[in-house]
Image (tube, rainbow, N blue to C red; front, top):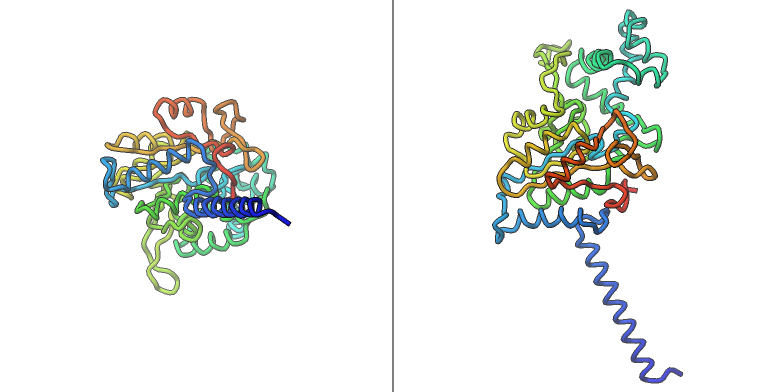
Amino acid sequence: MLSKSVFQNLIGLSLGLCVSFASSMAQAQNDPLPSWNDTVTKQAIVEFVEATTDETKQTFVAPEARIATFDQDGTLWVEHPMYSQVIYCLDRVPALVEAKPELKDVEPFKTVLTGDREAIAKLPMAELEKLLAATLSGMTVDEFQAEVGKWMASAKDPRWKRPYTALTYQPMQEFLGYLRANGFKTYIVTGGGQDFVRVYSQSTYGIPPEQVVGTAGGTTYGYAKDGKPALTKDPKLLLNDNNAGKPEGIHLMVGRRPLIAFGNSTGDKEMLEYTEAGDGPRLSALVLHDDADREYAYGPAKGLPDTKVGTFTQELYDEAMKNGWVVISMKDDWKRMFAD
């Protein structure tokens, strides 16, 4: 039989463990970013949000000025081995050639029809632009939205065999929700097609289409076969929302300088510079893909493999260090990559 003192010690130990467990559970439930490791990166993010939303602090920012902009490809979801929109355009070529047989022997459609991805990857930029223009125009906006929605519902990433919309980064999804819970308005600012991303932005990120700023083409007002008014997509570039085009697009579509800007490549540099040039507290960050096991590893910053997709140069890394931008290491800062 246990002595009274031993019994009391066991009771005390059990109570202590229960309290500790309850405290840990409460802490986990109160953690706004549970998929982030407890690193200086997470600390910097949380401290910035708290500092700009606490009315008792001099760093407080009024809700209407709490603008946060995010690149999409490589920042919010997977961009390797190729941007999803480019894959969509490649998949559209057979239907396009069927409708216009004269394109069958014309480049770049001829090469795309072979299915040889290595040959396709070697196509010059001028040919790729011709491909994008042909597959992203010539239809009404409503027809385009329906086509993209249908493709998104069936297309799957070649590595994970899952829909592209299932390959968003869970840590970034949590961050988007955390910001919105604290009065921030979140925008996607992408080099991808504005109309393309608007199809799924609400369901995938909780970001409505009017808060998507992207590369935009022209449209022409007219009437559909049923006589109803319609906008037809034209092969005319209005805004190239990449590099310097990102701050230009933000000014055009948002009208306020961001308080927060997140990207992952050289195409986001100007957006971060523009954000940091504003008065008061600012938070700029770059996602570094350095986890080949859970996702991909590419740079070439810090000796990582070089790439044409989502290039993160050493020069960009050095500028980030000089300017005090946060560099997020996927390997070190994220507990997990995807939702499951």
